[in-house]
Length: 249
Image (cartoon, rainbow, N blue to C red; front, side, top):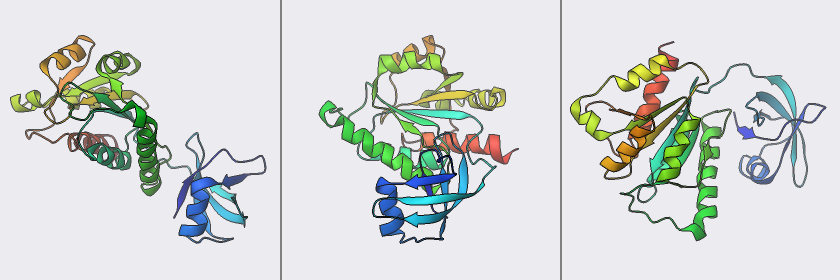
């Protein structure tokens, strides 16, 4: 069933669908009065709704019933990705959203080949946010992950203070066979707690960057015995989280 992220309902229990979502509902999906959709409010509550009215610029949907189950990961995982080449970050955002990521923070790493263009910044971030929104709708999420404008590395290091747990996915730890840190963190975390995980760009993080993060309390962890690409590693971690917090329980 089609899902739309909308504003809070009116006092009489009706959702208003406007803008791009209205265009999608009417022009793409060709829905009409009486069809049912899912509407998700800003606080993450979702409801089965029935389209009551379609005008020239909006659709009105009546609430049939509120949904009680939540498809969100029990913990809040934010992915910090060193800016990679090409459209790899778009892939991370799209698939990471489908796998339950809470948010995304691109950052400029020492080995980032991509040069961030401040003039194109707004349009780029808007595109990333749109990708997250569409992936959240497709995967029936009740939250759209927030995609930040790229941080510089010092800003990223200081950001760690805002999270309950913070990790570095470091390939040197994988080479050493480290396999306990991620498991220990998952075993310790409680529902609603936050986790920030830092992933390097192609070429990985430098020893200096890892040292700066470690000094601020970040723990280095391996992600299995294989060395993963920059776009694969976040998806591995999110899949492991889903297995631990959802399938195992």
